[in-house]
Length: 226
Image 1: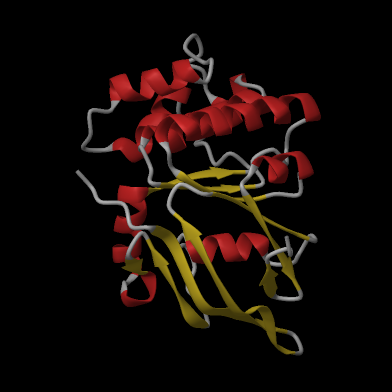
Image 2: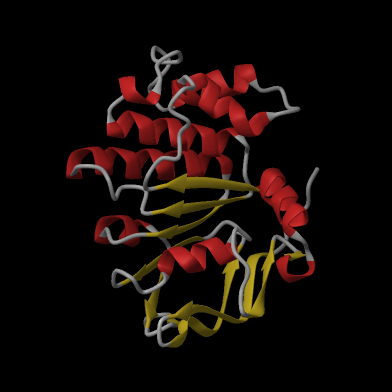
């Protein structure tokens, strides 16, 4: 049985700069925070504040300019791209605003994608049934509504039995009613598996459902005072 570290994420002096037309542009500066295993944390802030960049750094999809991220006991700064990918495959699930489904694959095939080498087909079907798509297994994304596509994305994320789930604006492309349904589904499945949840959102209702919120402001992550 895999041992879950007390802290799912430890972020130390994290910074990120990119080249701009007038020189380096700082997106994050000296960011420090910890997320305990099993927590649900919302990252909020103005558009363009770097929230998605931060999420990519936390998941090892991008590399920082300085500092470190320790994800489930793995110091990502000590791993190469293949090493970071291996950590994600074993421990991480993703839900994106734009769904990230392959258009030529069915709902079932999209959920099966990250499950190579596991008891996958029955698990994938079960996850799709849990999100209410048991009758839409062979439908491609173009045959599904936006809400249904996001349900496929959620099923794909949770099919991996992740220890930590990252969600980037999971309701951003959905109308209010469908977005609320997705919020309920996201937290219901999260409760079932007990995964740590870290999400980026503009949606106050979604942020309020989390146990804690962090605000990205002028390149720094701030935790509101109690």
